Image (cartoon, rainbow, N blue to C red; front, side, top):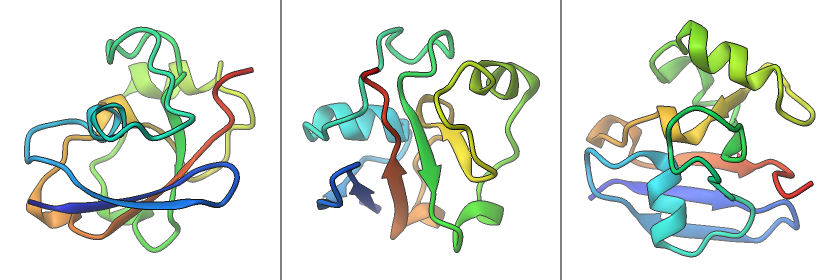
Length: 106
C-alpha cells in the first residue's frame, strides 16, 4: 500500500498507508488526521479537504479539473500548491506523497 505523509497545521507528521483507489481525503479520514473536515464527503462541493501538496510532488499529480479549480477559489489561503484531497486518487505512483493540511475548520 502506498504511504502518504500528512503534516497537520500544527506541524505534526502522520505517515499512513492508504489503499489504492481511495482518495487522499479518505485516507485522512480513515486515519483520523486532524484538519481534513470533508463536510461534503468528497463531492468537490465544500473545499474543507483543502491541503497543500509538497513542492516536490506538485507536478507529479494529475492536473486539476475546472470544478476543483473553481472550488479552490472558496478555500482559505489558496496557494500554488493547493489541491482538494477528495480529488486525488491514491496509486502506487504516489508512495511517499507529502500533504500539508490547510486550516479547514474556520
